[in-house]
Length: 277
Image 1 (spheres, one colour):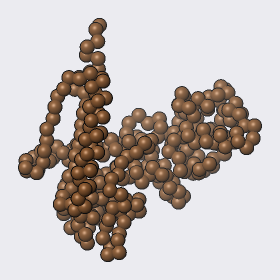
Image 2 (tube, helix red, strand yellow; image 1 turned 90 degrees about the vertical axis):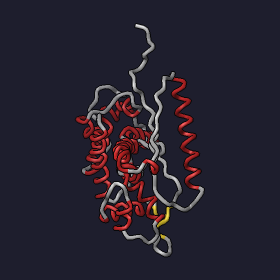
Image 3 (spheres, rainbow, N blue to C red; image 1 turned 135 degrees about the vertical axis):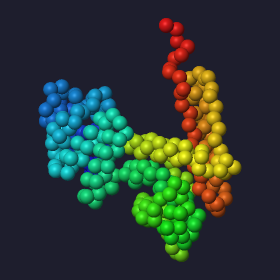
Image 4 (cartoon, rainbow, N blue to C red; image 1 turned 45 degrees about the vertical axis):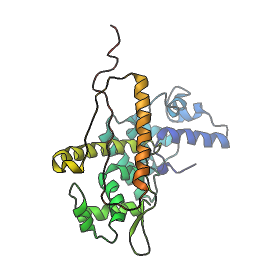
């Protein structure tokens, strides 16, 4: 079983803990649940399956029942708070606390680097820009970015990209990408950072309407009346379109400039406008 510091889902940790104990002894959900102070014999089973939520107040009791100590208990409780958080801001706060605990104890959360990567537009831009400007110093890279950033921010972002394995240096000391394309993947935590990234990119797009010459940008849109079936088909077409664009962008290894494409498709009316009554 993995160390608790490598988890991002407290439900999965509970399920894995039970499975490991069960494999080695006659451990039961009733015994587990009683140790955590619950009256229902299958309460923790239902929590691990996502039927019930674990409250923040009960998290420490469950952590103690699993014999977690000190920072492990703190980490488990932050996982519970992360899952229970209602807003992205609160989720980010608790996940960053999880990262801090893991970092302090030399552990690596597998989703941590992905979270950090998608948390800031700077990582996205510099991952493309640094290889396109071989040998450029952080100040030159900073001057090439839109919006403006500092050389210190560039250095911090590049150090992270190298540490996360998203960039590496070749024999001449030039930055090169380790992969051509980075996707969010089926992660639990990353979408929180991605939603924040979409907000950042949306704000940058608004600035580009006035700040970038019209012949260097393209803005267009459609307002459509659709059915639910049409929505699904359009989303699939968007996914195919994105793949085609990646193929176009990556067929030539050279880069003249870094662009961002925002694909936004969202409702402008409330649901079920054709429902009677």
